[in-house]
Image 1 (cartoon, helix red, strand yellow):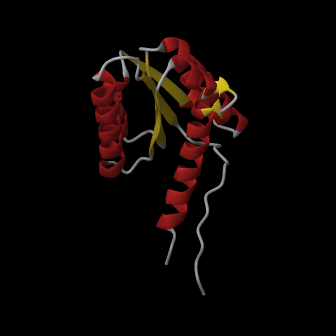
Image 2 (cartoon, one colour; image 1 turned 180 degrees about the horizontal axis):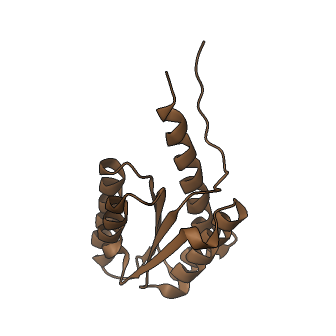
Length: 158
């Protein structure tokens, strides 16, 4: 018989680290609020959440990696906002943040969630940080909970 594994959204007993970029804080603070609400709504205890602020999205991977190496977090959520504006700086920061976070996710045994907005302008970012497009921080929190549960179930597969 085919085995089908699906995660669920029960976060009780999970310890979650959130690494959030201070650059574009008017956006990232909203992502953080959404993530915290999502975790709490799915039974992750307030005392089991650790928030670490870093200067910008480029710095997210190094702190995510350090948290993953500790071995006492079930998941790590990376939150940031890279807004294009008028220079090529956007491409370097967004690309390296994505590459770095993906690397940490591949190399650690901990789910590391990419919650970095990459948008053309502030308006698009704000729409994804609690506006018409929802809150991608909240979505990242749910992804973290689901991934922890999926990986736990994968460990039990015979």
